[in-house]
Image (tube, rainbow, N blue to C red; front, side, top):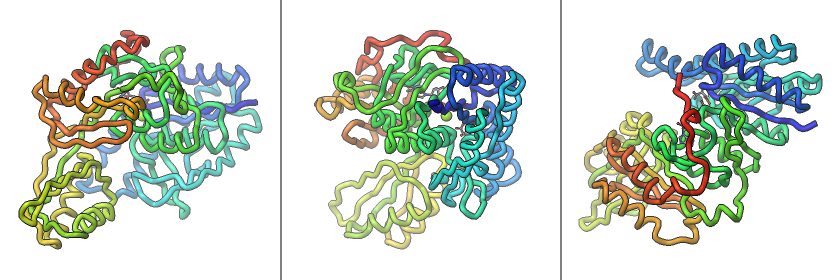
Length: 419
Ligand code: ADP
Ligand code: ASP
Ligand code: MG
């Protein structure tokens, strides 16, 4: 009997009515003769609400306690779903991440999975029951509760799919699949029937939150078969697979946006070997991920070093940057929290030239200034003003004629209002 892992995101389980609908869908899958593991996120916006609560009692809540708090969200939805399934006469049991042996490192709020035993899941499946598992959480080897970064239920689903050799990992969400751009922002975005692991990883890492970036790293590494689809309809969504030939003809597959970026500049940095190493070692020791880095040409023996980080890390990185600036005898540290990163992604970029020129021209036509640029084999990203970001996404979507990819247009009901 083949095993399916299904993951339901926060909007799919936002209220009791939706939980009952999920229960019905899960029971249908079970009755079609599959073993079934279901991963759930917290109800609706619960995780955000818990973080707001924390902010009300503490300016700088300890990350260990944040994990204790956030991990409660998923426990509620898992237990409610198990109850709803039992009401339909099917046996199901809910478990927390720690109970099913999801062992992580100690990086609270951003923990990495080190090992998955899934012992309890195997026992329950062997008895013919459905196993419900809380997404987004794990435990260190010394029994501390951890969470896997925002959107981390995707990672739980991918990790369990790999550990249990699932036939397919189905990610149920509030849109019908992966689109050429966020369909909430670009009304004429197209649903992609398939996309490669590489492209989805780049899209996710540059802001397409439909899949958590870290979950895509794991899915790519172990080639976990993925199907992203809507929990509100039966239609086929987007299958994520290894590169296929037909897809090579599509030069650009998608446009993505990371709204909450910040730019930091360390001015008048001595232009000497080892200085960049010192700066970025200090920053990485503070567990902040640096994204783009730009260093100006030095004419005077001093140069400016700019880099971007997620907006949430700005205060932390500023403290480190000011300390290291003093240490290396650089000038002042300035910052800008009003920037966004816009990216175009596509496997076809490997073999086509002129993509960057098309991108820059489209932005210029809209009078959008480019502040930083970075490229990879299948992606080009630009830092621009945040207040021009949506205009930029739409302009790039048009410039690469993504609305004419010959695929299905977005239907009205495909994009549900968020709860
Ligand atoms: P869930 O709660 O189910 O995990 P998320 O909110 O994390 O759902 O991800 C789904 C959302 O991702 C969609 O509602 C959509 O607004 C957004 N999104 C961003 N980029 C894309 C894209 N290229 N294709 C589809 N959805 C996207
Ligand atoms: N509930 C968590 C979050 O909001 C995990 C998830 O939804 O995937 O980030
Ligand atoms: Mg998500």
